[in-house]
Image (cartoon, rainbow, N blue to C red):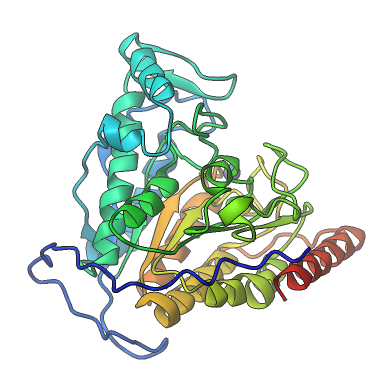
Length: 386
Ligand SMILES: [Zn+2]
C-alpha cells in the first residue's frame, strides 16, 4: 500500500514569536539566491560546559570540541559568527520528549558522581548540567532561527543526542538535542519541521520520538549494518507519521558521490514535497573516511556540498531557516575539524577550503555494492512516494 507523505495539513498563519533582533545583526535578503553576495548572520552555539561531561579515554570526549573550536578560531570563522547564550533546559522541557523517570535518573546519576546508562554511555558528575545545556541551547537556537534573529546556526554541543530514546539514553547520547529543537518549534506553532540526519549511525532515538507524528519529517542517511541496527527502508512511520520517516541505509564505503545522488534524487525532492518551516540537521561527521567508528568514505568537501544543498533547500522552502546540531565524529586529527569547518563555511557562504581527499579508492566490488544499494533505496522510496 502506498503511504503518502502527510502533505495535506492545512497551513495556518505562522504565529509571530516576539524576540528582539540582536543589535548590529545584518538583515539578509528574504529570498537570497545562492551565489549572490550578501551577508549571512550565522550563529555559533558553544559553551565550555560541554567540555565538562565525560571521560578523556572515551571516543566521545571533550577533546572533540576543543579541536573543532581550535579550527574555527584558526580559520577566523568563529569570530565572524554570532555567539548564542547558553541556557539549561528545564525538567519540564526535557519531559516534552523523555520520560520523567529517565530525566530524573540522569540527574541522580550525576549527583552521585556518575554511573552507567549502558556500556557505552556513562554519566559523569557534570553530565546533567552539560546535557540539559545542550538541549536548552538547541531549543533557543531553533527559535532564534525561526524568528530570523539569526539566519542559520551551528550548534557544537555534547553529549550528542540522536540515539537518546524517550525512556533511556544510549550510544553516547543522553537527551535528544535535535529532537528538542524540532519540538520547540512545533510548540511555538510550526506545523512542519524536517530533521535531516547524516551521522554515520542511524538516529534511532529521533525516529522513535516522531515515528507516529506527521509534523516532524525525519530523513536519515546512515551505514547499515552498523550500531544501533535500526533504520531500514521499510521503517516509514506509523499512523499520522506514516511516510514521514525516510531511511537511506547505505553499505560501507559509500562516498561523497553516493550521498550527493541521494540528496539530489531523494532527500531534496522529499523536502520540497513536505515544505518544512525549518530544517534541523543531526550533523554527525563520523561518515568521514578517516573515522574508525564507521566504515563510510566521505570527505570534508562532501560535507560542504551537502550543507550547500541543505542551505539551498532551506532558502527555497523556509527563508533559509537551517540549524546544524553536532552529533558524532571522532577523527580528531582531520576528519572532524575539517568537516565542521566545511559545514561552517557553507553556512556562512564562504568558499570551500583545502581539505583531505579520499586517500585510496574503495575496492571496485564495494563501490558496485554501494551503487546498487543507492539505486534500490531511491527506487523503494520513489515507488512509495509516487
Ligand atoms: Zn554516529
